[in-house]
Length: 144
Image (cartoon, rainbow, N blue to C red; front, side):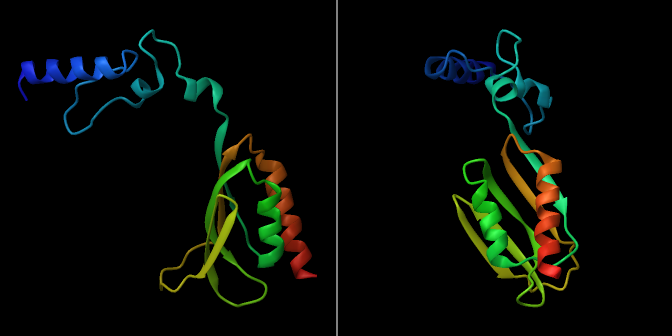
């Protein structure tokens, strides 16, 4: 791309958003730290003000599907997305689950590839130890 075309693109971007940082790259190769700084060198809103975390919890026992759904609903608004693989108490086999916008979808995992059961949570102000303890208690209640 010529220098004139690149300058024109940067001018157009500045016309839309004067605060946008622009970086010329080849094949999208860029230092990730560039994405978290504003033009003035301060950290972006995403870095300073959002408290979104990802928590992965390995589980080793079957879970009751209804209790699992109630547990996720308890965090509605805090858990933005959840996904993973679980064993259900009611039906043998490994299941894929997806949770978003307050809706839980569970479907049988049918591929031959072996996967370990895991719950991945994405949300605001997630406390790993609390979530792990609650999931462990949920599983313990299913094994009794």
